[in-house]
Length: 273
Length: 307
Image 1: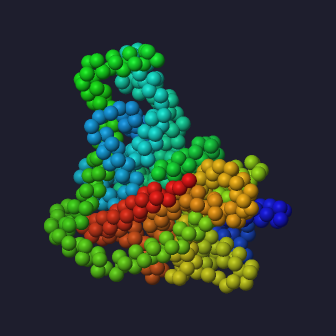
Image 2: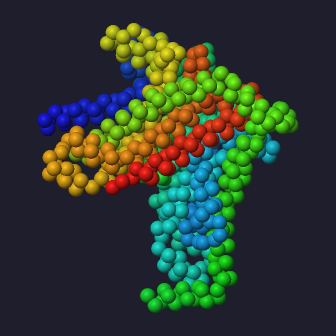
Image 3: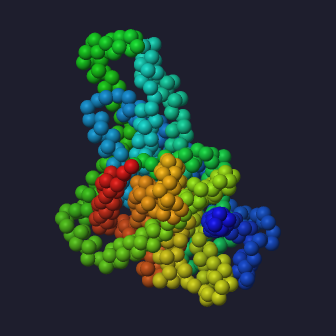
């Protein structure tokens, strides 16, 4: 019985791993194949020339893909930073102070965890148009500057700080903002890291809003750039896969580096209930 | 702790004004967030509801039309088609994702070899880092009826070529596969956390009582895992409901409107046909539907958390 269970478990593990990894590996290899190889029957697993950069070169020739990547980076970093700032300030305010209407405000912000973005996109679009922010970096970044999740996370994190630290700083004559910067922030570093990772990931993978807001090519983000090589008539798979690899690569790298943080981030984002 | 009470007495001595000052400071800390959410999100949400009662021309002028837009949308067969397509997608992808995630979570929980366990966990989380667009394109390539590798593989076992994303019958199930692939990691992580929080004494007690293996799983694990299962189910339902990128970039709603999902319908009504009033009706509908689901979750979870 023991051995059968073990074998079953390992087979299941293998099957799951193959299911998850195969598409990624397949995409990776396809990005090095020539159109002729792609259309060959039967299809070969490995490309003829590994690390054949032709497709990549064509992607960069056809579109300002590097610009797309930089745009995504810019927006994501900006969203990340603003989020950390706004959420931690609010988290501190909600966690360690008391003022009338505090709970109402907190729940009002939290309620946006349940509001789908698509329900606010039309008025937001008009809002942004009226302010002349259409097709600008500011316009794209606007809905990404803070998240209800971030406020919730930071409040939880700050709540765990013992009051004594803050009181001690106050006795020492520390000004409030200084307390926030020097006492509170260093003590919530794990939560800040979690928030940063999540925000960066979400912003990098955004598609709907940039699609609506962006017109000119040089403002496009990576997810929009992926559209270039596919249309209703045909899809140039050799280019699409190369572009997709390029879009996934930064996140994959970050993933490998921040493994632990990402697992913790995912766990915390799900346990928000 | 004399110093602490002296502290408190000190704080209260000046009475209200100091308390009020601290209150104001606290409020000021929350102000950026409050202003942001108020002006960007709250204003937009309320506007959405207001906009649904008007008809909007491209210039920006509006005309009050009452419930006319509601009537237009509710009598539009494409709206209902989009809704049923979306529900069909939910009906397939949600149970399958949860089931697979449960299996993987149990695998991870019971896995003795730490390296394999960590490796598998990382592996299932990998799809999360791809954008929905990238994932959809990857799978579209695999699903390609002529050159895709899936048709080649099923050919090995004698199954003829399938249309997958190009076949009206198979497009929603194919999209479900993409959803499952994307979401397994996230749900597995949540369920694993739940599994690991079940004290082993419960299993020991069960063993003494003669229950083990499958019975223990059914009677002990599942009920205690209930909060996480409910959380994961609701999250998946919301995710499936909001599906957009996958169809926009691959099928565009086809073939024959078989994959026209509700968000795609909203997108096209708003940004292709520029019928903002009608789109706002869909937006309101979306908000209410998801609100219902979330409230349901909150009520449900509170009831069922039993130890």
